[in-house]
Figure 1 (cartoon, helix red, strand yellow):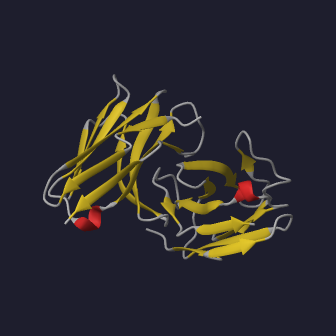
Figure 2: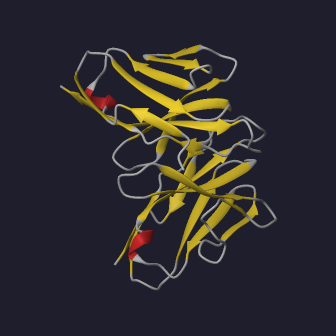
Length: 113
Length: 115
């Protein structure tokens, strides 16, 4: 079964607004990553946050991690139409060997021009 | 990050046939993985492709259905055998490394339709 659950499943906003997506997971993790997928294409890696980190920034992206609540959020500020895509969180559970990723269900973000 | 290519990018196949998908990386990597993404769904890990040894399969996936090869550090293949319409999915390879970086980079995917 999937490790992560994301909400909302779908989000529609206007260009310039901020978009927040949430991810929850079930077991202890080594790290959590966020990916973007445009229209069924390959995944683009956005950001990785480790279990001992609480917040990370990359350009217009801000990721938080709360290991006590087993949750993470991805904030995209000043959204653009080009941000329209599906966003997935992926975790590496602590008990697994190697770097096998377990993906959440994803959030479909639509940014309207 | 590594540049990853997959062949074919898409294919339409008949029930009962097999398709081999290739994944090529422009640099040597430590780990290679194969994922499946069924229509409208998230990604599920099929197996870890181990260089020079048998792949490590996840629960629900077996070697007879999804044989995998990894002859060197830059190349891997996934075969989808004896296909049925339920195998219609996007198949993606991903890589990590060289070394343990925890970050995986994905190929563009192969969109498979089985009639």
